[in-house]
Every structure is written in C-alpha cells, then in structure tokens.
Image 1 (spheres, chains in turn green, yellow):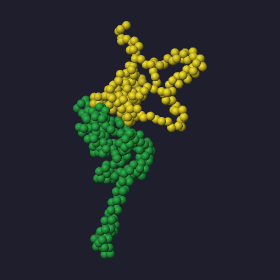
Image 2 (cartoon, helix red, strand yellow):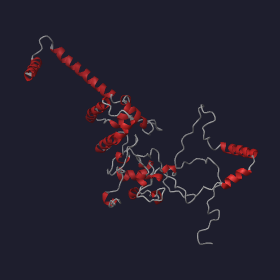
Image 3 (cartoon, rainbow over the protein chains, first blue to last red):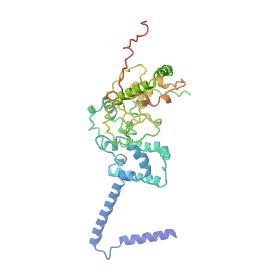
Image 4 (cartoon, each protein chain N blue to C red):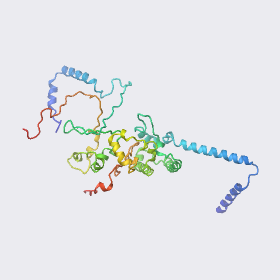
Amino acid sequence: MIVRTIKSILLWVWGILTTPAKTLGLGVLTLGGFMGGVIFWGAFNTGLEITNTEAFCISCHEMESNLYEELSRTIHFSNRSGVRATCPDCHVPHNWTDKIARKMQASKEVWGHLFGTIDTRSEFLGLRRELAEHEWSRLKANDSLECRNCHSEVAMDLSRQNPRAAEIHTRFLLTGESTCIDCHKGIAHQLPDMTGVDPGWKVAPELQGEVLPIAQ
Amino acid sequence: MRGQDRSGRLSIGRLLAGPMLILMTLFVTAAFAQFVPELNGYPDPMAEEEIGPIPHWVTDDIRQMRAYPEQPPIIPHSIEGYQLSVNTNRCLSCHKREFVQGSGAPMISVTHFMTRDGQMLADVSPRRYFCTACHVPQADTPILVPNTFKDMLELGAQPAGTE
C-alpha cells in the first residue's frame, strides 16, 4: 500500500518534470534558471563565508569560553607585527574541496552543540585529548597545510633564527622528516594530558636504544 | 638545615632601639625605591602607569657560569609560550633523560629524581617538576637591587687539600 503510494507520487513528479512547459516561455525558463542558480550559489557561498569567521566560531559558549580564551594569550592572537590568525585560518582548509569536506565533518560539532556534549569546562577537559588528537592527525595528514598557508619554509630565513631553531629546522623540517605539528603542538591552545605523546624531533628508532623494562 | 637558625638576626633586632629602626627602614626604603617596584603595586592603584617595553630575553644558547655551586643554572634560550602544567612540561621534552641524545640539551640533574623523603625515582620528582620555580631566563636589564655579592673564591676559599 505504502510502496504503491510512493510510486504514484514519484511518477507524478516525473511526469511534471518531463512534460514541456505549456504557459512559461523558453526565456523565462532559461533566464529564471540562470538567475535562480546565481542566487543559490551566491547564498551558498555567503553562508560558507559567514560560518568561516571567528565571530561565528565563538558564538558557541564551548568555543568562546575554552578555546578562544586560551588563544587570546598566545602569539597567534597578539604580537609585535599585528598579524592575527583567527580560528578558520588554522582549522578550516582554504582549498574548496577540502573546505567542503571539513564543513560536512563539522555537522557533528553542530550535533554536539545541540545535545550538549560539552556544556562545562570539565566536560571539555575530559574530551580535550581526543579533540586535540583529531587536529594533530588532520595536520599530520595534510603536512601542516594550514600552518604553511602563512609559514612557508621557502620564505623562512634560517639565518635570522637563533642557532638552535635553525639547526632543528634544518634537521627535521627541511629534510621533510617532520612537519610543523610534530613539534609545535599546543602552539595556540593549552595542551591536554600529554602522557605518551613523543616530542616530534625524536631521533631515528635505531638510535633510540632499547626500552628498559619497567621495574615493578 | 640551611636558613633555619634565626637567632643571630633576632638578637640584632632586639639590640636596635625603636626610633633608630624606623630611621633605618626609611633610609633603606628611600634607597631602594628607585630600583624596585613596590610589591603591593603603584602608590595610586587607579592611575594609569606607563609600562615600558618588555625587555628582550638573552637567547644566545651559551651556558653561563654559576655564581655559586648550588645556583640553579639559568635558561639561555627563550621559553616564550612554553607550557608547563600538570598536563605537559615543554622543558622536559628536551631535558628529560630519554630525550637528551636527540635534543643535545643538558639532562636535568639526577638530584631532581629524589623525592622529599630521599627516595630516588626513575624520572623527575613531583617536587622538582615545575622548572621555572628555580630556573629562569635572563634579560639584559639594569639590576633591580644593588648588591655586593662576591664569588667565594674571591673571598679566599681554598680548594680541598691546601690546608
């Protein structure tokens, strides 16, 4: 019974779509379609831009009272040259396809907001390691693309860095052995419990030696 | 027990008469006022005070001599933005025993493995976890308090076996 009803509705829609228009002119249809397309695409892009601003990100209490507060004390927020990185600069890919993919993933965050996954500071702290790991793995997978949108290693003048930084960058970054996020975790937010997370510059496994048995 | 015996200081305090003590306090305060900011803030707490630029840290990575053997070594690099909390310790990501081979940083002293009960642990003891309680970077600024510190070698300390 239900199957038959659905089938009849579908056939009716199919009929409307395949029957030539009787009262509308070809101009109305093509121009109207074109205008409709422009309006739809404009609105879609505007919506995308609005949801890609810091103001939108911190309109949620989860973001404002936890992550934004922490960001406001770091060098990416306030510094001598006055360049500021906002939330989407680091957390949303700039490339269109990747951006749409990230936006679709973010629908889970809307779900979390509506159902109060993070309502309190302690709930946030409880999830912090997991959330941080998501971002670490994302940046690891795309070779720290969002860092490199501003910090290019080609434009990095190692002779203006202090010798220690220059040496480490030469050894790990320029060789492609490590990527930014390997060492610079927690650059813009406080870190979760880092138990078991290696510093990114560890020497090659064959040079690390044996793991000693734990004395119990 | 260093610094536990206060009897010497107390007896000097008792010897000094009240007016003289006040006079001395005033003198000392006047002498230091130009160098040291008041611990309880500026005289007019609601006024907007001019804040000078933040001095630059000494970040030349050159290990400095200690002024006395027990002095906690100073940090010759920038620690700007380093996180040091119950969750993470940025200092130990280089200065920990397991990591010094890769980082080339000096290992934290083995004295830091001892708990306050004298028990040696396999890693840093909780009481030594917060590095910046003792170790600090330096900035190239005028000294806040004038002092007459002399290295003990200048005072005529002799190496063992010379007596």
